[in-house]
Image (cartoon, rainbow, N blue to C red; front, side, top):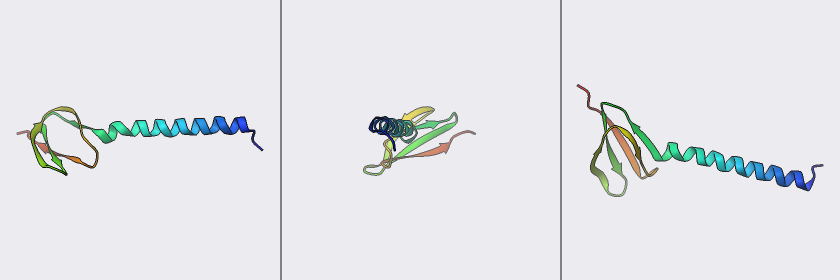
Length: 75
């Protein structure tokens, strides 16, 4: 039988692990990369296609609202 102190410690460790797991997923859901020779047009589910074309680099997106569409512009 486990002691109440051990239960509290294990509960705290499991909550910390769950929190770190969620925090590790946020960057992959909210960021996208555009490689050299590519451009991105973003489809916003509320307002349609955005006028701004994004070039190389890392960009922010709102998950499930903004969908980046990557196009190759190399010749």
